[in-house]
Structure formats: structure tokens, C-alpha cells
Image (tube, rainbow, N blue to C red; front, top):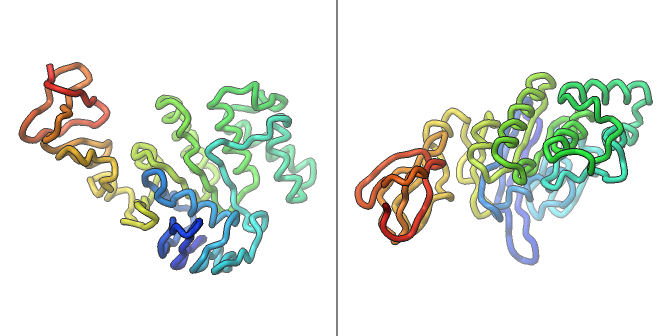
Length: 290
């Protein structure tokens, strides 16, 4: 069952079109990751869906109801019943963890006993129930991420929207929170639309990948195809014959530029010909390799 549908949506800022004829259907329970480089329009997709801006052309539907059309917001953000986790988290600094989670529940008119029950249950899921009275400044970066996530989920949204929420974290913590997100997904069963430029995040999280470039969808594929090599090439070095394929990402190709690739251990990979190695095990150096 389709829960979200974009139909030929376009958007421009100051006469510059950032989204071109965008059409996408998201089914209930899917984890859709929109993958692309900075400036490709992926965050604009989330802002349109959340109701922060109106499309210039096309329409957006949620549960079969049109919520936005050309130049019009037909349903306000609070009426769309979507959860959002922003890149900067946007936690209320003057409120406790409980206050941050309770804010949206109060706006929905949920009675106090039910608010307490929901908050207690979801904080236990992420092992944060001991921090009920803490303020955001007293939490670590990973703890703040968890609070931002459960603040959106405690509202029981139709879909959860996430805008590069892990981009400011180190790799180890990012991987841990991906596991946390999937564990919550298994328990709560929400629909997810997740924006990132990171292929590893996309591969870990998605059931479906939407690859974007220059405001357009290049391809929309299930995760199985993504993992066997159907990858966009925006991360390739245009000065080099190398390209990224597969999952986890591998680099294959011949280096034809002044830069040379080597293993992080320092051993030579190639100067001519072809080779294939995990991208994370490579570093770029100038001049001859040692």
C-alpha cells in the first residue's frame, strides 16, 4: 500500500531549479534511502514532504490525500503526522529529555498518563530512561541522536523522515546508531525516508535506494541490486580511471593521473593496469608510490 507519493514535482529557488520532475512512491513499511552528493535536491524532497515549502509543479500525497500541489500547501506540517529528525537534531536546549519528548504529545492532546507511558516505554527501548531529567547539553552526541530519534517516534508517525542525522558522528558511533535504528524499526514497524550522501549508511539501512544527481532521480532500485554493483558513480575521481562498485564499496580501474593509490599499509596497488580493492583500504598520494 502506497503511503507517500510524489507526482512530477519540481522546485526552484531564485530561478534555479533544484528538483526536476520528481516522481516517487513509498510503500508502507519500506526503508527508502535517498542517496546523492550535496546539492542534488535530496533535502528539498524532505522539506516538501514535511510541508515546510510548496512545490512549483506537481503534487504530493499522503495516504491517498493530496497535501500539496503547485504553489499550494493544502495540509500544514502538523496535520501530516510525519516525524522528522534534522541534521542538527533541533533539540530544545532549555527542556529536559522528558520535556523534549512530551512537547509533541501535548500538542496532539495526549492525556498525561498516556504521555508518561509512551515516553517511559520508548526511552527504555534505547536505554535512555535514566536520563529523563537531563538536558541536551548534559548528553553525549550519541545520546542526543537517540533522543532526537525517539522524540520523533514517540508521536507514532505515519513515516519517519531523517536528514543526514549521522553525518557529524565518527564511524564507530554511526554504525552503532544504524543498528539502533534498525532495531527500533523491527519493534515499531514504521516507514522510513532517509537522506544521506554516505553509501555505507545507505547499504546498511535501506530496503530501497533512490540515487539522485542534479535534482533528478538517476535510478530507483531495491537494496539487492545496490549491493551487487548497481551503484551511482558520483564518488569516482574524474581525473582517474577508477570507479566505485559493489557493497561494501570497491575501487576498480587504472590510474591515469598524477595521483597514485596505495594501501594504507604503504604497499603499492598499481600504476598501470587494473586492480580491485576495498575503497576504505586506499589512500591517495602524489608522486611515485613507495
